[in-house]
Image (cartoon, rainbow, N blue to C red; front, side, top):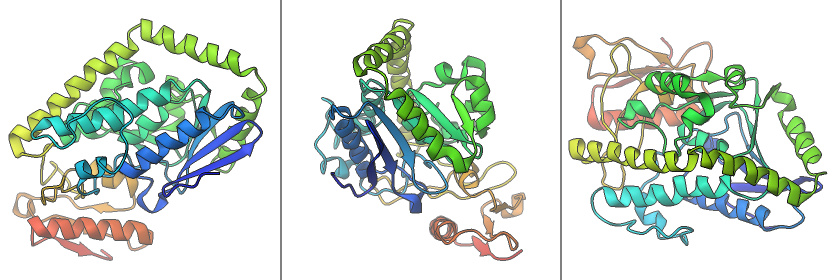
Length: 356
């Protein structure tokens, strides 16, 4: 069986393949290599006639923190992989390289995974942030642990939503607007009520419940499963799903274009939020500039991190405080310390305190 660097490929039951995101030290953040390996693993399962059902899971306490915004030289990394789609221009100037990359590994991969001619089940625990949604929404069924939380905070980065814009279809238009406007987290039970999640189970039962469902589906005739999946997907596309996602992808690119025109970077930069600031290390985007932007990513992943209110006198002097009674994990501390180092590059007076 093929082995990967960032993915585990397993056969937990007869006719079932289980693909596992395996970067728990980064909360399964998606760098270029992980996405290409995930795509290869999906292809492997899709092309195996013995596999009838595919499970997508994740190792560690969180499903995925979204795109790995700490990855350096992202466009250069594209050249290390054989492209799957027909898009080009990954090293072009301006917004073209950004659009080409996102067309290939974001919306392009999502479309391929959505149309795999076999049932797919996502098993989600912990945080599922932004790009994490783009891994589960292409799946046919979503099983969530009680501790699962979902959010798309990218409006805070000057962008209208993630590249695979299925929000109105998954949540309904008004709830989609609320969650985009606020960037708030949505719990598993709320996601189930809205129809985005099929079933909520205890965390300890997530793996067994998902495997049992996959095994039950795998008893059905594979061609009938294929027909049923295609019928539902085609119905959604006739209703406008495919055309809408394509149109909004272009709108998404105007967000990057606007940010590029304002700052020379593909997202909007801000140093502080209105009432509190949590520095979030995003990326250098290949040009040596560290970014700081707002609280949602860091507070979403590490809710025990204390956010100190700002006053005008210290607005440019962010303070990150480790809670004394509920210490962060080593991985969390390392990440926050990396954030603070980046803050110090722009704001030398920043301070990291522990305890209060």
